[in-house]
Image 1 (cartoon, helix red, strand yellow):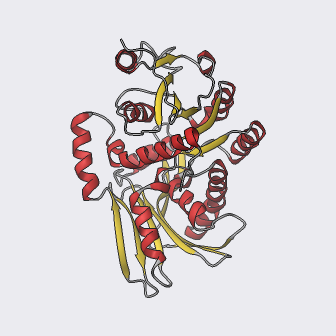
Image 2: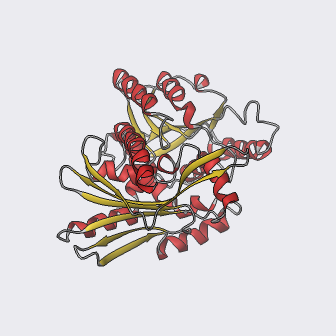
Image 3: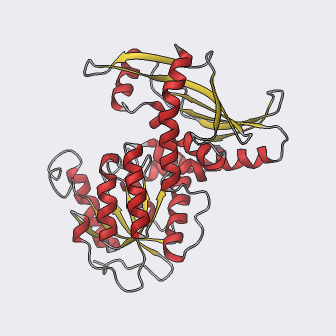
Length: 370
């Protein structure tokens, strides 16, 4: 058994909060990337897992977690804890980063506990908190306590977004459309289950990444939106019963264009049943498509095949977005360890404005589709 993991002077001491079940939990995938040295500035030293080290130990996924824990302790010196309060005192000169990958509703509490445990930087999975009010409270606490919170909006740093923005910048009067697809069956049963499980709605769930792009790169805010126009021909809104029998109203597909008061224009298209490829397009002033880049592309597909063999049975979306998760963690970890600028990474302020935009758009788009 190796000695306890220790970060070098150029690394962040990472505390993963919420590992989840191996092959299923996003936290687990963050862990294996760091243990595989894919993020040079991140050293995974601690895992905090309240569920599988507590009430969930003997339930589904419990034995698999224990196996992962033992291997991580033995081979990598990772220390496991049931709560953040169990973390050892931060060593002098060390920079501690909390990567929080638990339930969204728990994030405000977990952020406070992570700060108490000596974390100077917090990485939060999207959307950060369930409501605008909760995120605003987190912003206030982060400011008062002098820590930085960065968000896991991975599309902010992914290849297809970067390439589309770069191409568009060289074309006069170009227009960018970000397209997000998913693989639900186009049936009342499948979509009803989706609507209930993601009851916060499409714009706060599936399309929240695209809204974060608009806030990050296109000056979109509720104070700067001049107009929002839904594509009624493409878009669809349904009211369907979920498995519980309760009815939910949501978009199964939506496309809209936002114009800002500062002169920018951008479109978003999201389709629950559109397939497994997301992409961005650039069109000219005559609506002729000049550029398209997809996720995954050919290079990514080759990596997906390698990862699928390495981690059989794992969630397939881990593999599609593997390079983006790595890039995001590396930039956040390097910022924590050395102060390097985390280019493109969304802040808590962006997450807050993104949720505000989502709440602003939903009733407006619903009215346009009635």
